[in-house]
Length: 159
Image (cartoon, rainbow, N blue to C red; front, side):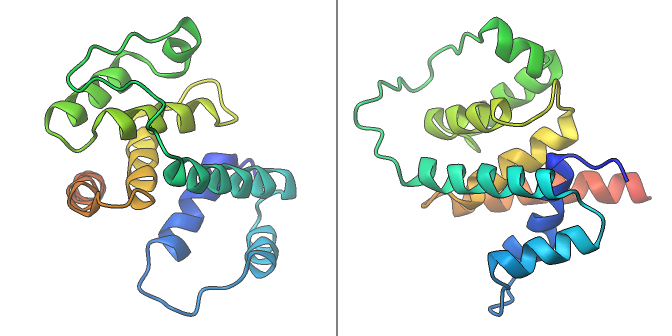
């Protein structure tokens, strides 16, 4: 089974993170289950590191960071290699409709760059945005809006 870190993250998010279940398993139990369903230990560890880094980012104080609302984001060459034109356009759209603010946009970009992949597609980007918003305090409305976007796209594919 050729699975990557994004697949592990999606599995965790769909089955454990974004659920109402209060009896969530601990990290060791999750690691065993992920390996049992076919994910490689290395990818599982990378996914947990990625999630742990995101929780640290959401707790960080951004007072020292200059974030100008409605500013133009210039992407580095490395970022443009990872985020194609469609992905960058989608991030701009989400910012314009106020699903993302400047801070969450930067966290999304940082989390994309932290992935162990050369390029991500638009569907994967949507899930990453959803995961980032889930961990951001005060962004519940934006999360709900993004959740609707992600799951409406899934329903359109099924039908």
